[in-house]
Image (cartoon, rainbow, N blue to C red; front, side):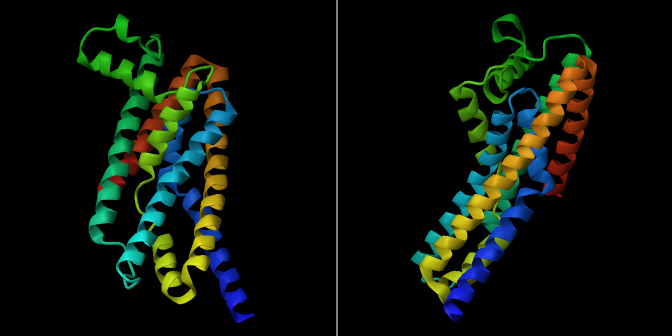
Length: 236
């Protein structure tokens, strides 16, 4: 009974961490950058869910490391945390600039997605390439899903410190079975939560897009400022 109660407590803790991580503001900022130009709620939900992949990969890698070193570590090395934060911040800066460029072009009456063949200069060509590879189109394809999911996964590679602390405590005391169940619970709840966030943010942009071009541009520019602010906070 005691073992069962302990496992249940671990699962509840992992699920709670999945919810709290899913609603973190920096995740919402990153998701908004990848859903600003989509009309499909399925794609928006998929983008949100893909953000969970990076966190789960980091947790799995940490458990593998704990197993190799004899389960004696209790926290993630500072270098891993720093590298993950720098990666997440860099991706946020990139998507903030992309949102700003898109919103500015809309306000000027220009196509939001310039074509590479119709542009001149390195900045215009870079913007065209970024739109083609990071933003979804009106009719999402498998390639669109793959591109945005990869970007989302990379953004979320920053270590989920509280979940790493949980598995560090559970692995040596309750074993691999309880740890594995905790990771599954965390992954399922985190994916569902971030999928919900993605759907909501995608709906906001879709609504703005339906109102007018200028409203859509204003929402994109405001989102760009918010995303950039979160990027700066990560680097601070």
